[in-house]
Image 1 (spheres, rainbow, N blue to C red):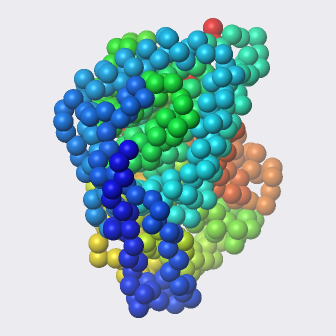
Image 2 (tube, protein in one colour; image 1 turned 90 degrees about the vertical axis):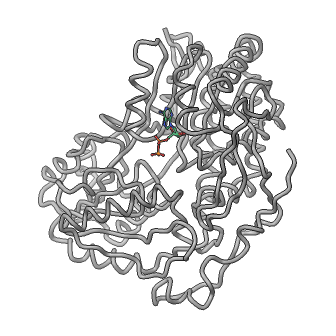
Image 3 (tube, rainbow, N blue to C red; image 1 turned 30 degrees about the vertical axis):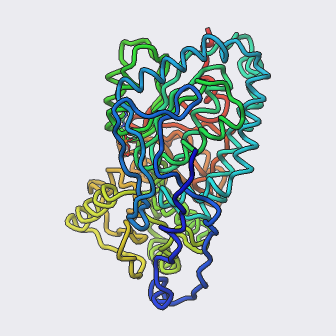
Length: 504
Ligand code: ADP
C-alpha cells in the first residue's frame, strides 16, 4: 500500500495549549505533555476494499472521508462498498471456504492465527496510534487495553483451532460456512478480533464490515493477514455505512450474521434474517447498573465507577452508566466522585496523560448533549469536570447527574458518552428491582465487602456480565453478551466458539 500522508501533519500539536492546562485539569496538579511518537506511522490518502486477498476499488467508485475526531481534520478516504462489492466479497469468501479453508487441517488454521497474533503484537504500537487517531480514544487505553486484548483473542482462539472436539465433548463440531460480521466504532480492532478469531478457528471464512467512522485499523489488519500469508478470500473487508451492512445481511449466500451495534439496527437485522436459515448473534446496547453498598471499600469503588463510565469516553455498551448508591453513603459517594472527576484529564488522545479523549463523531456528541439536556429538563442536577474544552474536535467533559429518577430518559436510554446517572436505594431488594428496570441486560457491577451479598445479587441481576468489586475487566476466556434488548448469543470463551460451529 502506498503510504504518503504523514500523521504528524494532523496531530503533532497538543490540542490544549500549555498555558491553559492548569485551568483545564482542575487545580490539583499538572503534567508536562507526553505525546506518543506518531512520526513513524502514516496513513494512505485512500483506502480500498479488501477482497480475495487484494485491495480493490469499489464498483461504485465512491469514497467517503474518515476524520480525526480530536481535530476534525481528514485522515483519509474510505471506499464505499455497494451490493455488487458485497457480492464479490461473499463469493470470494465462499470460494476460499470451499477450496481452501474448509479443507485445511485444524492445526494449520491454528498456525495462521498464531502468526496473526504475533504480527499484531509486533505492530501493536502502530495499531494503537492509528486506533487513537481514527477513533479518539486515549492512547493509554488503545496501547494498554485494546491492543493486548486483540492479540490475546487471536492467541486464545488459535489454541482452540485443533482442539474443538475437546471444547464440545461428544460432538463433532463443523464450521457454518461464510460469516458476515458487522462491528461498531467503539473498539474497532477488538471487535474485529472478537469476531474474526473464533470464526477462523472453527473453519469459517469471513466478510467483515467495520463502522464507517473507524475503518482504518481493520484495513491495516488486512495487511497483517497478507503478511501472515492467510489464503486469499479467508477474510474480506467491505467498508461503508449502513447500506453496506444491510447488503451483507441480505446476501443469500451468508450462513451466519454476527452484529455488534445499536439495539435499533439489531432489531432491523433480526427481522431481515428471520426465516432465512442464517444463524444470528446480536450484541446490542446496555444501561448497566453499578450497585454500591454501604459496606463497600469506598475509594476502590470510586475508581471502579470512574473506570466503568469514563473508560473510552463512555463509548462502551457495557458502561456502568447508572450508579445505584445505598442511601447511607450517598453524600460521601457524591463528594468523592465530584472531587475525583476534577482530576481527570480531557484532551489530546495521543498524550499519554490523557484520561478522556474525543467523542467519536459529531452525531454522537449531539446525541450525548441532547440526552443530558433532557435529564436537566426533567429535574436532574449537573456535575462536570471543570475544564476548557479544545475549540476544534468533539469533546464532552466527564459528567454525572444527581437527582435522577428511574423514569428519566437518562436512566433508561443508552447515552454512550461520559455521563453517569446517580440514584439511590435502601435495601438489596430495591437495588435489584431498580437495576433490572430497563429493557436492556448486558452488564452490572456490585460493590460490597460481603461475598454472600455478591452471589445473592448476581443470581438475580438480569445481566449477561456481572463484575464484583471491579468493572470493565475483559478476558478472551470469558463469555460476553446480553439479555433482553441487549441481544443474544455470546462472544468470547467457549461460548464464542459455539457461535461459529454446527454441533449437531
Ligand atoms: P452505533 O449506534 O453504535 O453507531 P449502529 O448500529 O448504527 O451503532 O452501527 C453499528 C454497525 O452497524 C456499523 O458498522 C454500521 O455501519 C452498521 N449498520 C448501520 N445500519 C445498518 C443496517 N441497517 N444493516 C446492517 N448494518 C448496519
